[in-house]
Length: 108
Length: 108
DNA sequence: TGGCTATTTGGTTATATTGCCAATCTTTCG
DNA sequence: CGAAAGATTGGCAATATAACCAAATAGCCA
Image (cartoon, rainbow over all chains, first blue to last red; front, side):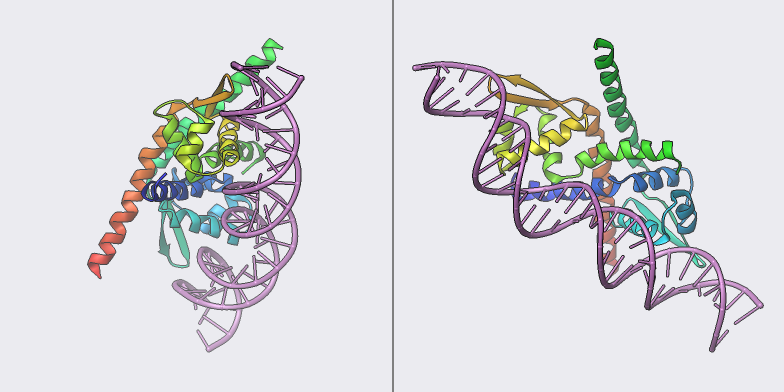
């Protein structure tokens, strides 16, 4: 892996890492349906506002969401909806794993 | 987020987290071209064998790669090639970010 | 069997992430 | 202005990751 390659994969990893947390996946999923302000997301997620705010800033820094101020509220929405494509494959992986463990059990 | 939802997003996050490292992305990319044994990958990655082996076991535990023994060697290959779909979107995110910073510079 | 190669595992240290609390900032409104 | 609501930031403790070295394991062959 030369330097240029290294930087490319580091850049990619930064983006994927931003998604690599259950709460942030939940937020992305939620934002794929509609824009939400921090307070709404906090209610849905069920943890501290500051925690949710930090998750949002991670997603924002990675370029995955954008924010828009409306009065005292900040609404977040998906910037690159194609990240939803991830989920399809992730489900495939999960399903494959489930199938395999079922097969193992059936075989005994 | 109720318990069932929480578990679903945790399961998804585990898979995405497995990809969230530059070396592991490199390995996935490499395996998308051809199966490789640990030793070959170690050479390509340029770090300790044990480090590469651990990265591979993370990918394997996540259900992303499979391994096959041939003599003393263990060949790894992609189990779910759809994970390559990730890259397309990741590039989009990177490109968008690059465009934006260019636009900022041009605006001064 | 004993040595050799390939790989995995254990242990340690350094670094990064996470979540909460407290404090701060911003905007609205009385 | 001053209070209140929404959001962000700083700090801290707990936990998780990562990389290396050393040691253990597995398969091959003389």
